[in-house]
Length: 258
Image 1 (cartoon, rainbow, N blue to C red):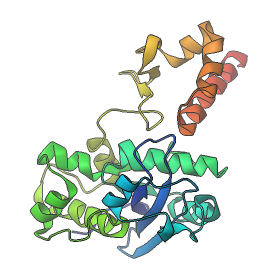
Image 2 (image 1 turned 135 degrees about the horizontal axis):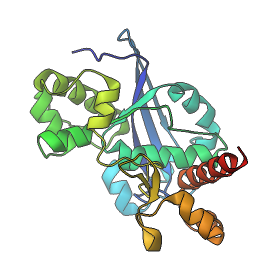
Image 3 (image 1 turned 90 degrees about the vertical axis):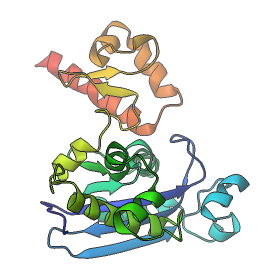
Image 4 (image 1 turned 180 degrees about the vertical axis):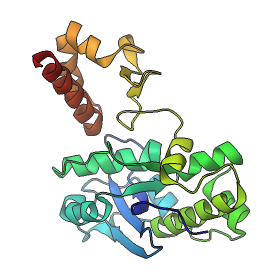
């Protein structure tokens, strides 16, 4: 089944130095860009993370420090990656909770104003877990009747994710062939910052999801406790979370002026 798209979607997968969104770095990125007419373009690049890859992580994806010693840094390729994904929706396997937040961090470190406001994000893992409760390798076997022989290769995982989504659309009548529907269906909670520190309440207003202000409106907390904003910006939170907080603060300030 061909995806019913109104604009291009980029399925992508990252191999990284670890699973910490704030501190770990990309060592390989693979993107499959699918256009509304069905045309496909691929992009795969090894990346020098500028920090060591732990041996236990190398055992997972097979990429060592020696393999990427001469590779470009993410900053070196950030503009070309941004040109590929700009004005596209995004798709991946566990992408809402990991790949997109990590990509956002790398983009912001490279001084690229990455923003998800007008982007739909389809997480194929969430669809799979809601329907079948399995891993990507099992999903590939279940939906496509193929073995994922090269699992944890970014390119293999990316291509498998795209094939799984198309098979899911063929299998489940409840799924609509529409990016907005699939993005909403594959989201677990509505996060303003992708990393989950700022969530939307039932009224669609940003609230903190952690700490002493959990459940409170961000605007109210920042208004009553101005120092909290400065603490958040200086603490070890993702850059994209800080970007979202700054935007909320500026919006509230502009609303007061008007």
